[in-house]
Length: 227
Image 1 (cartoon, one colour):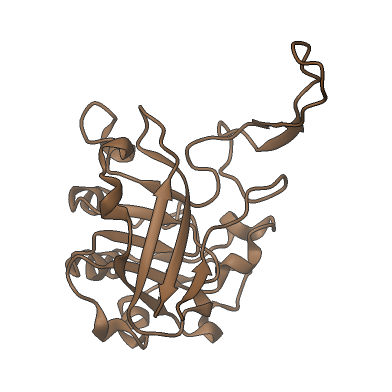
Image 2 (cartoon, rainbow, N blue to C red):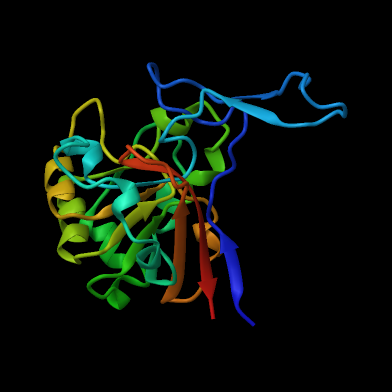
């Protein structure tokens, strides 16, 4: 029997969120509907944006919607049952939540599944940072990739690259790797949760975004399947 692991972060009020001008999610009840004779119940997702929660993203997020392909252009069959490898970083190195910690090439090479990556895989980096999903430190103190670490990942030629933290760069002193990342035509899946529950070296990933036109990214439901 397959083991299905939901790696989608929950969307709820008070969760992590990018700073303004990104709006914050507010879930409110719909007012009473006057044109039906019964009570109906529905919710308004106020403040939801294309990078709310766990989302899938194309290079158009960096280059612009008129200079790259949009999320709706990605065939859904390419997002189902993708070969996937989860790289588990040593948990002891991620425990410091006071200072931002760089993720290095050494960290990636020492992860136990690094040797299982094949071209075209989804590669997900697990640090355990998803435990702070509802905390103020989630963005401010999260780990980040060094330039060399991102080049190492790009050289693996993944179809999707993801992680369990949202802010890949150090905004205080940028590693300046994003242009090369997006030029490599890799989809981004982030931030995920529960990657620490994945035990097998090679698994399957399905990541299905909301079917919304005119956007480079959208919230998605993502699951890992261990056979």
